[in-house]
Length: 512
Image 1 (cartoon, one colour):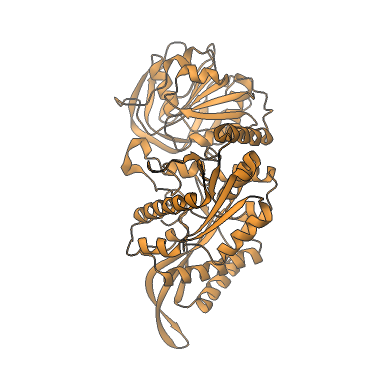
Image 2: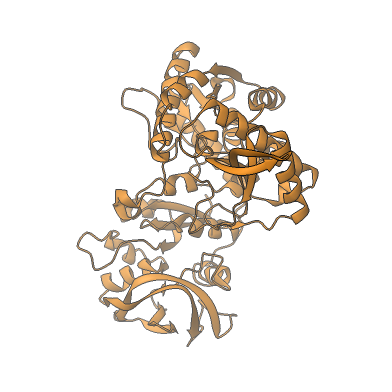
């Protein structure tokens, strides 16, 4: 069993980023709920424990707290943001609400480097996100760094190996943050850094075999990275007891159905069932404009179609999905407040009670780039692994407002032109994601000396490493001119193309 660092999740959207950074240091990490009993954590034989950040306030009556016994396991503990405040409060310190919320970049001034800041400069720019702050240290602790708004931006109890950071070292905005985490892993937890991706693939496959046993699995194959890698993993684990189902929901890109079937035949030696359900989906979506309602309807209909598919293929016990961690965290209400939910994902939230299938999500704790690495380890081809992400609801969330067949047809043709030009200019693989959005807004134009009143296509292209944050891509002017000219000239009903220059946050990558 590899050395394991356990990350207790207190609801931060950066929790899995912490786990990912640890894995990047070649140390195995495992995320567990914040209220996991200490006895269960101890069974994992952790060499270190990280308390994640979170949206709650330590001062709230129902603030999430861990089993206090974790501080008596004799294991190094690192508290990050909320985790620092929580550790401070639980061990006898005092937390108060800050007069000025500290959000964004701040200057960290290191007073004593010790093990946590060994080899680092005396000042660094770091990323903060907190409204409370520690104002009294617990017994045995000392302050080792500060920022403009916090005298206790980093604290330590070197005898017990307890450390705290008020900032987020895991995000790219924090200078040398990866090295700070590395110091915790290697100087404090004495990690070896010998964990490898092949080990992870083996662990996932063994986990699938244990979970599935001798039963059968049905999987929704979209042809994208996530479902393809999930299919490859499950097939490696259980062979032909996997049946893949491809649902043509009428929300696919141009020629996508034929491409998926060809992909399957070239790369998988398993069963494939193609279901034509475009009429059903579009009928249920008629007149619906709210993006959340569209997602919910698409997800519900997807499950209904699967129910019928299950009956047609015989005895099946598990439904497999290519759910990734960004899907999960965007679908979880922040701080338990439903109003704070970002958006629903069609493959997140479990199955209806009437279904007797168990859920199998082998990629649930991974980011897209990690999924691609797993796919490479399984031998999947580059054109599959490097394909841009495509949302579960498909073009249903790329047509703004009501879905109409004519709108979908227009969008397919425009998007095909964009993808063709990106491939031709070798820009495609430089981007995280690029696609067209149909705007049901008519604008005045002139073509051939005649007035036109037609629709708008928005082009969205972003750069990212994990979809948690993203910047709009500065595509070459010549490329944008060609894409715009071709779409307006070749796609009937479009007389205007615009380029989206919004970053995430505050915008999301998809428009709906």
